Length: 356
Image (tube, rainbow, N blue to C red; front, top):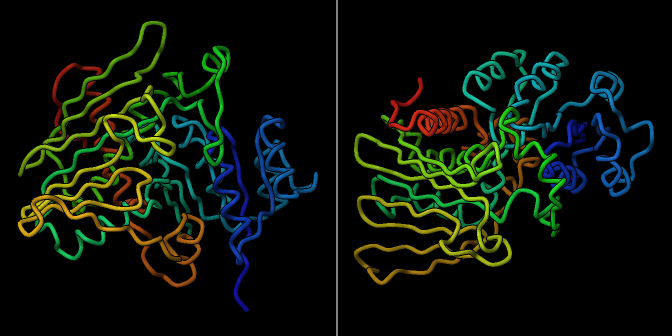
């Protein structure tokens, strides 16, 4: 008999909670035992969608943990509150899946790691990891198709964080919603840099085999009337050359509907060729000496256990097989170091050495 993993979803600050709960409901070895948020209205859709009873819906996380006894907790708090939520949940001994980014800053990330009891796992979900193109690019890199990987170029963003909800449902935000959202509050880790540069830094580090850069030089634009940036560009210096991560709230279209210009995604340069992988496209493009015009390669549909973070985490816990790279603390912490250095560089207006 295979084990059934008891899973709870706590804190609905980030709308990705809906996506993750759906993945729990679809997993044959997972049971959604409870949800919790201090604002009951944010849980109504999930309660109805997943057929939860009143006894499975909580506004107090301690009661949720004590009564539901989950094996795994999904956390989706505002970026700058990740540390305090791990500190609240970790003592109960459950494994934690934290929705991206890793943390509001590097010190917070390290405190989260230290807070986890022995035997309890902390993993970080980066939704772009489950894109077929990303996994195909990484497989081709591992096969040596472009030689030594030297550089990544990343452009990431969308129309804005309030223009869509769970499973990318369309939404037109009001001015009041924007004013009230944590996404636009500096104290809560808002801004396009903290929202999206983690993708570039973390997945870029994954594709580069966790090579450690030397320094980061970042600039950003904070529109009049806002506390946070809606556009940021970081140049990441390695011993062998430069990489780049650019983030944008305010693209002309969302990449999951119509790719904006510039396209959202990655270009990876190696010693023997290049690979491009644009978000949500079903193919990647290889350019090498045999195919200087570019060779379009279809990206096969992702297979279990690499279709979503729930099944990847459960597979890891059951078999000991490695987590896919960006979920690991090693890769996510390196991404956090790059993001933190970029943030401080933008504030200081100069290049800074990579934070330790």
